[in-house]
Amino acid sequence: MTEATTRLTDASWLERPALAALLDALDADGEEARVNGGAVRDALLGLPLGDVDVATTSHPDEVTRRARAAGWKVAPTGIEHGTVTVIVDGQPFEVTTLRRDVATDGRRAVVAFTRDWAEDAQRRDLTINGLYLDRRGVVHDTVGGLDDLKARRVRFIGSARERIREDFLRTLRFFRFHARFAEGEPDAEGFAAAIVEREGLRRLSGERVRAELLKLLVARRAPETVAVMAGAGLFAPLLGGAPRPSRLKRLAALDADAPDGLLRLAALTQFVAEDAERLRERLKLSNAESARLDAIGDLTPRPDPAAGEQAAKAALYRHGPAAFRDRALLAFADAGAAPDDPAWRDFAALLDRWTPPAMPVTAAELMDRGVAKGPELGRLLKAMEAAWIAAGFPQERSEIDALVDRAL
Image (cartoon, rainbow, N blue to C red):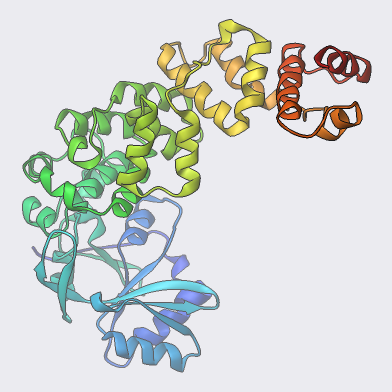
C-alpha cells in the first residue's frame, strides 16, 4: 500500500521534556525514531494520551548505549523482541526496534530486526494501531489506518486469519478495539476469522485473557460487542460455561458512570458460587479479585428492597460496603427494573447514607459479667450481635445493656 500522511492538528505534546529528550537521543546520527501505536491513534481522535511508545531503526544495544550516555536507566523488558524500557526523568518509555516476524506459534513470535517502517507496520495487529508519528508532527500510514479511523472501523492488517494465528490474543484485541472505537457491526473478515480460529483461544494464558477481557468489558460498546461474541461461541474456549450478555447489558446501564470490569465479568459469567472458582483458575485472578467474586457468590440471600430498610442495613453490616454494593447492583440488574427505579436506586445507595456501626459489646465485657472464656463466650457474642442487629443497631448504652442482660 502507498504511504499516506497527515499532519497532527496538535503535536505540542511531542515537546514534553522527557519525550523530547528521548527523541533527541534516538532520532539522530543516521537513525530514526517515531512515536507509534496507541498514542498516535488517540492523538488523532483527540483522546487523552496514556503511555507513549517509540519505534526506532536502532538495534536494542544501540538504544541502550545512547540512553545510558544520556544518564538514563534502561530495563531489558522485552529484549528478545527488540524492546527495552528507557526511564527518562522518572518516566518510562517502551522503545522497540523495527522488526518482522520470522516464526509464530499463536502465542509468541521470533523476530528479526529491520529498518523498513512499512515492514514493521505489517506485523502489527490492527490498522488503527499501525501508525507512526515523526518529530515534525507528521503521521505515516502504510496500512490504511487513517481511513479506518475516519470511518470508525477496526480491521486487521492484511489477512485476518494470519494475524490471529500469529497470536490468538488478537481475537480479543479485535473485539476490544471494536467496542471502544468502532461504529456498526464488526469487520466481516475479522469476525469470520475469529470464529474459524476460536479454538486457539484455549491456548492463551489466563493472565493475558484476563487483562484483555477486563478492558473489553468496560469499553463504550461492551454490551453489544459481547453479545456478538457470545452468539459466535467465543466464550466457551475462553472461559467455559454459558455467558449471559443480557445481564451484562442491564448492569452496564447501572454502572455506566464508573464501569467496573470485574463486576461486569461476574454479571456475564457468574451465576452459582462455583463459577467464582472457575474464573479464578482460568483467569489467574489475584487474591483480592477472587475474594470479591466469592463474596458475590450466587447472591444468596438475594438482595431485595422490598424486604425493608432494616434488612438492607443488616446485609450491609454483614457483607461490608464493597460486597453489598456488588450484590445490590447485580440483584438490581437481575430484577429487570428500570435504571432509574427509585426503590432499587435507594437500596443500592444505602452505603452512601449509612455507615455500619461497630459491634458495641466485646468479649471482655461479657467476661467481666461472669462469662468464662471458651465456646460459651463465642456463642453468646454471636447471639448478642444477632440481637443487636435485629433491634436496629441501637447505640444508647441503656438499650445495649438491656440486650446483654437478656442474652445472659
